[in-house]
Image (cartoon, rainbow, N blue to C red; front, side, top):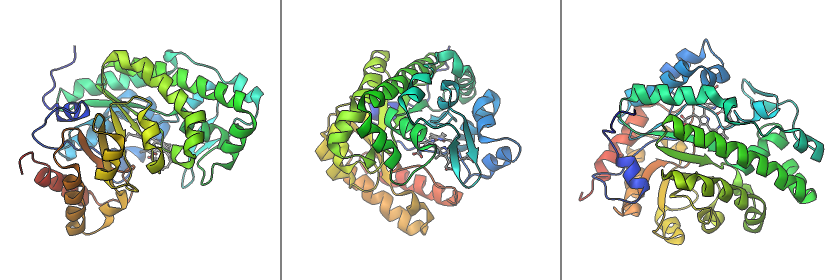
Length: 348
Ligand code: CP3
């Protein structure tokens, strides 16, 4: 049995229920900006940390011990499913993820295995252990990559600026494209259902790179597959967050995927984006992560601005507009959270 939850601010905000103050967590809150994380990474690769439940749990807890955050996110990576599906994944220093045998043809798509949930046993063990160690302090978020974003790594063979190879595949082989995204959607659905069984209390889908698509292409080539995942998670009854970057013109379409919360980046002003989305969905965001490099006075000003734009309407979760960057000073993270506490009080 999971211990009773002592802080449910984050879950309440996901459901657009009233809270005493705006909840706050940061994407990639466990990471290289923390000395505690670097100490572990000195002796273990990123894949080791993901796959050894004791390490994954320890790293997940690090930001919770250090900062007064309102949610934890399980330490893992969106690219983990690629390996058991048959793609040879490694993380190369200063280069990021590399897939040695990228997907370039219909045959490559056919060869990809729709692995069952057993492939990620280590993840569920990490979730169960983390839930135990959190002892109800804050809820735990599980996550996976969106089908488009996973496909972009599988096809490009790593990170990309322009997604030319991905789009060329998509436009030239629409049938195989959809077959590929269906495979990712099925694997991700099972993976997330089992994270839920293991105890996570909310889910975030990171579709980080859908912003490279024209709205009509997003609607045709990406949206149906995200919708498929969310439709199958919906009956579980826990909050689902759907996040992407560069999504300003995609927001109304992204809402159609059916998540409870839409993650916003900093290319939109929170009040305008929320008005366009409609207030029947919660929003998360949206401070530019680079603002955390600025002097604390600037951080304070920018946090205040975002919270004023949210206007104490129920259903805003404070976050960055993308993952926290490695060079972020930890004291600036303290400052940002203090500013959220200061300006995010309901009735202030
Ligand atoms: O939020 C958290 O604290 C949980 C951990 C988490 C990681 N990756 C660990 C990680 C999460 C939520 C992710 C998601 C992820 N991974 C995304 C979506 C979010 C986003 O940033 O858009 C993407 C695109 C990836 C793929 C990925 N993983 C890349 C491109 C890289 C290399 C780039 C980089 O920042 O170094 C990774 C490696 C990675 N995953 C790191 C961490 C903490 C840094 C690696 C390290 O410790 O050496």
